[in-house]
Image (cartoon, rainbow, N blue to C red):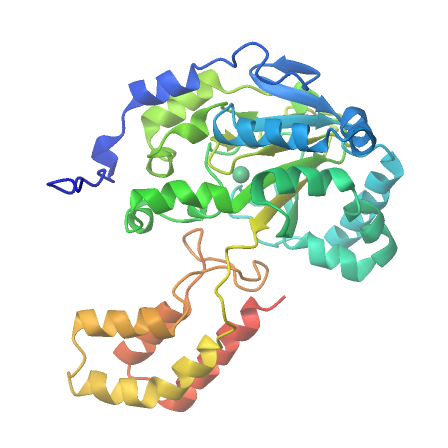
Length: 388
Ligand SMILES: [Fe+2]
């Protein structure tokens, strides 16, 4: 039977409710829900790499994957895997590449999550490390545990992106946040997405981090709020002072050793911890694994399209023949209106977390009356800046 009225859930900051959030975050894992975990600390199931590697021989891999899926979806949202790397040389070789790449890059590379100099960041270190040293890259990324955990959330196929994040001694904690996709957008933009899309976005990515050094509690392992990914309005909540306060009172941290990893639902509230030490560079290789489904069916060159239709668009715009709504519609259809994927070295966002889109650029061109040559020049620069 069809409902007589359509009642879409409301999607704005007025609906934020800290009691509902609290109820979700106060959940505890039922006993024996995760029998394969070695232990559960602060509500976070902990697995050993050794057990997971043994599962490949004992046909238990799917059982582990089923537990992970449940944890990321209905459970606390986060797991730790001790000895994710059993050969620490693989970590050391990659750490060496990170050091060399940091030296090459020098100071001043953008990190929009921390004050200058307190954080080190290598964007797209996945590709950079592959280009720098293929043998170390292969040793590191042939780790079958990465595939196992990624497949538990995303299915057989996926795309890996990684960034090095270093919190230097005395580096402050990050603000709590959610991660890519909507963790990179401002509230006004988030609200334009219906609530089901906000919730769905967490199924498109798995977030993780691999410890490249021992990270005791005072070196600031990631602060985590188990179960917080279950709050539907969470993308609008993480900037709210009440929720920030709640996070600061309730987050948990687990110390990590070199070669350990943690993985979590990208909607989980979390923050890089404060590094209170004087001598530990807290190096973590941050991982997002993206669903194969975050792609369209056909390869379409939107740059080519918008460049080709620009003279006609400009003409219509100048003659007032394109209303606001029609203009918006044609631009959304013919331009990439989303900021990602991009190259965060050369296309750093200015004043926000998300770089300028082709749609925004084209709108600027029309309103400023750029001729075709100027538009072409700016468009090509935009395209170039986004390439790796
Ligand atoms: Fe994050």
